[in-house]
Image (cartoon, rainbow, N blue to C red; front, side, top):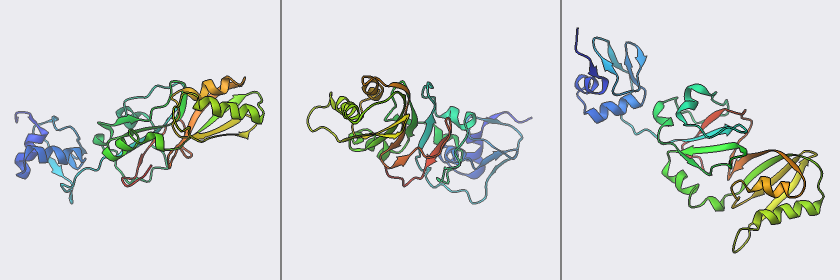
Length: 237
């Protein structure tokens, strides 16, 4: 019986490539052990057949951005748990595979308030990380607030004033309107984290849910709570 050896070491020897190149191929999901894809370079092999998918290349693995419909009352999870524990949305048009590497080193961005739900974002892409960090205040965000109670136009204006109360300098434009008898729409830049609920409740409305529908140009769309999707590599917020 052959002594067990790390898959990356075995593949490097088999293919005549460096250990780093072997690990890259493994991460791309093109290496199979006994016919099954293995994505762990430290996986031990002995006498099993190890193959590389035909047409596999050393092209870089593109960093991806991941969005998730964060359900009410659910904390932000480790993105890797979404891979096998949550459904992928039919809205995903990224063309990306389910590679483990796409879920690793994902940085949470523009995080929702503790009592908010809706569009949550992670990214591995440096450009997206910078955009949703340094330039977040330049992006308009849209929320829907499920409420009980009634409020006149003056009350809607007071909600807008409250959302801007702690912002110095030029105050952003805030749009507050009724979408239905039980639903408010709020759109603004420089959203105070967790501040929407308080601003609405101050006007006597009972807040059922605060849900983010849009961040810049990225929409939650018709995703169901708990679903996730990758964004295309060239997407712009």
